[in-house]
Length: 154
Image (cartoon, rainbow, N blue to C red; front, side, top):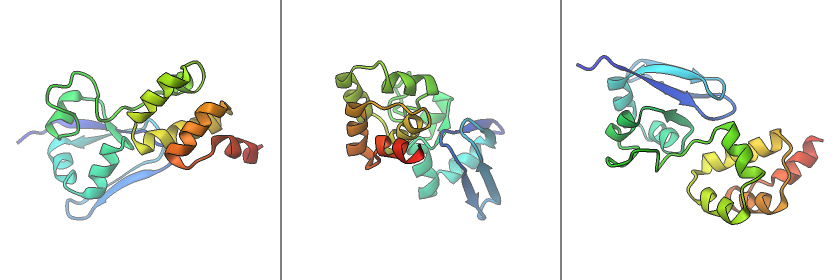
C-alpha cells in the first residue's frame, strides 16, 4: 500500500472543493495557491469522479509532481514538462497580457484550458491591463469582456 502524499494546489481565485462521502473526504481550497496534501491512493480513487477529473484536466486544481500526473493520466507518458495542463503564474500572465506579441499570444492562448483563459481575464481585470487586441482574443475564447469589466469596476 502506497502511503505517499500528493500536494494539490488551487489555481483559481475563490473557493473550490472536493466532497466525496463515498471515501469520507471533504476538502476546500479557499484561495489561489493554497496547497492541500492528499493520500496518493485516495486521489487516484477520487479521479474516477467526473467532477474531480474535470477540475484537474482544466487546471482548476493542479499537481506539480510530473510523475504523479503521468500515473493519473493527466500528462502523456513521455512528457518532461506540462503539455495538457499549463498553469500560468502571475508573472506569466502579466507577460502574456503586456509584452507578448499578439501573434504569439494567439498561439499560446490556444494551448490553455478554458479555466486558465478565464484566470487570464480575471488577472487583466484585477490589474487593469487594457490591451484591445488581446482583450478581443480573450473575449472570443471566454465570452468575457475584460475591458468592459474594468470599466464597470471603475
